[in-house]
Image (cartoon, rainbow over all chains, first blue to last red; front, side, top):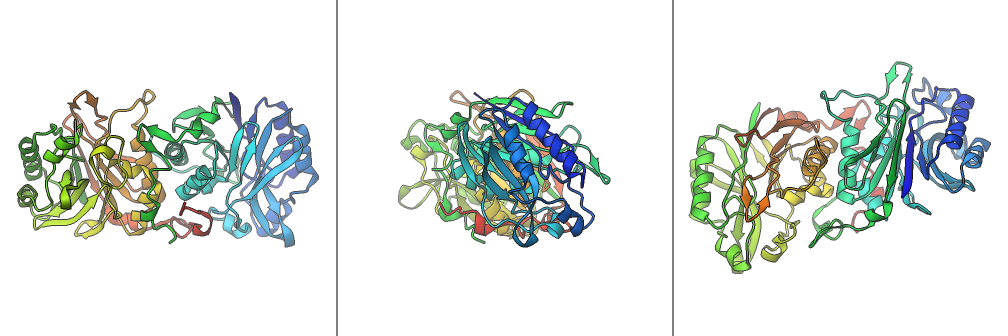
Length: 266
Length: 266
């Protein structure tokens, strides 16, 4: 079994050092095979200006990210979101997948939400699907998850688990209902038979409330774990079972697709 | 407002005349702008042999379907599933969209579930999206709904409502959870801002239990209505609101798509 853990941190906007220390201590103290941390865990989210966003961004070779890798216990894998300063000062809302040797894969969010468009450039590459000792892990960020084409893509690329650092701004929902993003994750998991670990953030930032909706969805689309008051969601997963896409004697989730009829290049 | 009604009938396998009378009386007695009836409402579902399925199938010009149209109240529109005998005796799991003048559109299910593959040929055309006086209605059948490419397609084609005749065989689900097909419908509605009306069947047929999960999902992905003990789900919908795909100041559900990154022709 593979222990997947999400820890719902509360980064503070602009406080890079404090946020970094929080990430390092969480990595060092969490017993997990796969640890998922929030989107923009280094920087906070609610920037007042492009200048402030730029001050909060770090390049992928920043020593801080090396310290995350150094803090990793044994063979564990960590996925964490950060504000990336790319070439020529262009900013990206990025996530890295690391083990103790350093960065295994990077991803720049391609579907940007609302004011993110003022600060970040969208990525130009699809999510990586990385073969790790625990299974194949895809990385996408927050609003990316709401495009079923994208979750399908990484499933077709062989993902066993989609790791999703998120910052979900709180939205209205009917009494007793789960956050809409979780319902979307459940459906994506079910129709692709792939597990999905969404790590949200907590706290209130410049008046913005967060859903605090951290949830791990099993590969059959049900809720495997949600964050309790301690902000942690944990699930011991059998990720390999997700590779069997036969869902009846005569049905295969991918084999049944009728790509001739989808017309989705629009 | 547009009154959408689903009526969860219990057809009996092979009893064409009784099933037909049930359809006619339901059409005649239901006050609805858009009435959705189950998949294979004419024939039942659990066929013992290809010969039995063939005996249960009718061509699109069968007088029975003319009687459905004749039973329609005023301007109403009806969607109903039936076992179709096509050219050269090929069978299809089909649905028609009718008004009082007759058939406005026909659709043959393209994603066939399990033993349906023994009896039916898959359709070769995507779901129609039909402009009616109540809005644009797409028609698909049961398992079709579980392909997010398909719900996306009809949304891009302009659907305000997806009408889905279904026969959902009961599957295990955790205590307190909705049927998985409903969760999939909620996500499809939310990511496309399109309403979805799923009309399931009821009863037990040759040992097969049905979910009896008839549900209308609003265009924001929440549950608008489910069938009560009388098997009816009713919702007064504002279908036109679904046409605005802007979900924030800077986000448009379709405009945000990154078709360059989906790679879905596989």
